[in-house]
Image (cartoon, rainbow, N blue to C red; front, side, top):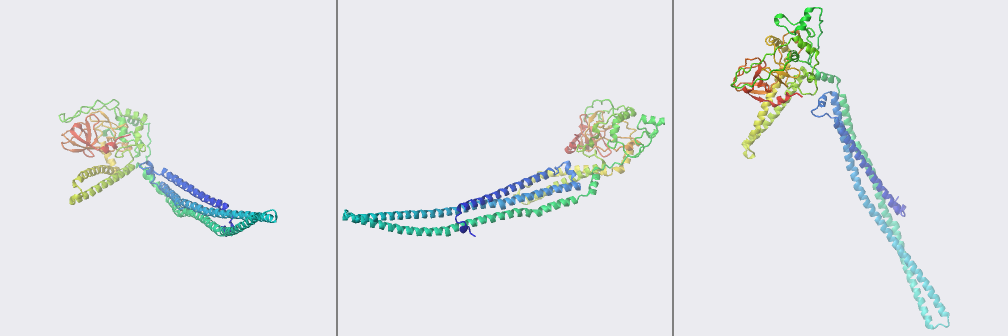
Length: 616
């Protein structure tokens, strides 16, 4: 089966067919190219989808991914990202193995086809030229034969006419012979041309055209094989990524099977456990006894000589009716004066009286009036700002429940330890570099590293102080439960001697030693209350966090209420900076704190702690 023998006369149809074959190949290339674009678009959409649902860094969503269900979802997102990558591989392989290869092949195929049909046209033109030569020789032979026949007839006529001269007859005879010779020559030429044409025609239809058509047939068959191979590659490219896609799906299944509902439930407990005890039973209050009602309405706390107060919030229950309102906040609402405080005194100086200005005494209203006002008034929303999720809070996380506070403090300590280790690693590396520079001065100047080493030393010292501060708070939280009752009894013993003290309201207003009020952004001061049943209803207040250190420039003998004595050169902690009244609040240890004149000390504030005390 050969196109050269079977289709020897179908040159034009073969030309159309081969062009159609090239068009089919280009159509397949276009199909594969659009498929690669679809794969790329699909992969891009999958990646965008996976990225859209990924948790944002340093956000609340990132914390939610500690649960097994959300971790499984995160694993699904990651596997979908890999799944999208496999579709990108499909697109890349189809582009390189099919689209690129076939595009080059089509260009070669077009050149080959053009060459073959050019040879075919050339052979066709040659045979047509031979045919024209044969036709011309044939016509010339025919014409010469006719001329010879006419010349012979004329000679015979002249020879038969007695009136024609012998010369005319001879001339006619010679002309007839000449024509006969020309006819013979034309005959010989026609015969030779005919033989040549037949030979050329035989070679054309049995040699040249079959060879050309055979090459065209082979070209077309290669095209058909090539498009078949490309289709097979089209399937193989998909088949190659199926195992990897299967692994992605297996990982998604594995992540789904790793979901542990019990573990997630335990994590919820760890995340939201407050550490508070549930409220106990409320005792029955017998209002038929006038004495109990009178005592309940008169005051919240009596002196130890008069016995314990009969006013009970929930009886002797150890539970808390207001677990989110601290004890000193409530007492602040009960004892804060209605009148604005007097103007602040002038700042103390080294030449001033050592004890500073006398702190004014505020007159205390009947406690029942304050309590009635508290019970009937609506609570201000900023009393519960610690409940706002994501809101700013004190640096020591005292606005959180005990268990959550412990976790936050532990997390902060771990972060600081990591930062310390990082700084120490840098310092060790620079120290080694300095040693190398000392041994080999040509490699660098050892003195150039000293500045950076000094900075690292300062950073490490600051981080250590910060870590010690948080470790102290952490130790306080971890040992708070056994210390609570003892601290409450110690505070209750001081209440009779200190009827008025500096307290914080929900708006964080506190009274300084001279009686003036300042707006404080830290947590509340400790409140001295008697050891009554009311005392058990609220948590003890946490001490204010340190915001820096200070050095005493002069000796100050604090004799007034709220002040503290310091010696020249003594280093102390600052827990409240000067608010414009000339006083700075400092702490020597856990039990000794108070105010000193600002001009008596040199303050070194910690920027991080100060920033952490700012409320939003």
